[in-house]
Length: 227
Image 1 (cartoon, rainbow, N blue to C red):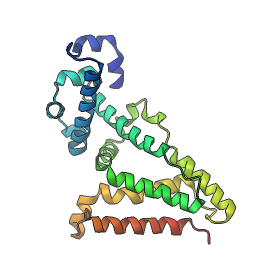
Image 2 (image 1 turned 135 degrees about the horizontal axis):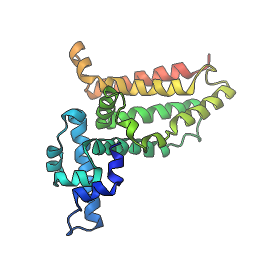
Image 3 (image 1 turned 120 degrees about the vertical axis):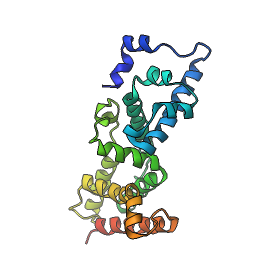
């Protein structure tokens, strides 16, 4: 795995050390700058099309620093995936829907999922790229599988409460509901260019996006409500 190359003494010796004129803060700044530049580069061009030299120029550092901190291009790409998924998980952990009714809580979860994808187009691009690669690099990460999303567990708890209260349909499966929420929040973004071209309609317009959000939310609510 690419991430393993970072921990081997041989790899560190081969690529050298960071510049001596920088302290710990400088080292962290270089790494953060590389991650930011790499996120934009991989999101824009995919793994195959991304160029290390280009992102290093954007980060204001050298190619040597990529190999120092990440071991390889794939190691950098995996770190970018880990950072993107980590930000999503951190945002999910802040969710608090236990102070409301089960139906409203589930709709708030949908609002969060929809709004997070809408506000993070780079995440859409990275996930689309990795799906095309059949999760080849994501599977190499030791961190991402450990980032268990709290949302399915929140959904399960809310669905159980709603079923007990008679406000949520008994046939609602928490995982299928989560996948449905993601699909309604993701597809129109991941396919925005092809859909816009096919139907001669600009799906990037703010008005279209607002209406899509309202329609999708209404669909989720109609699906959840008990007869």
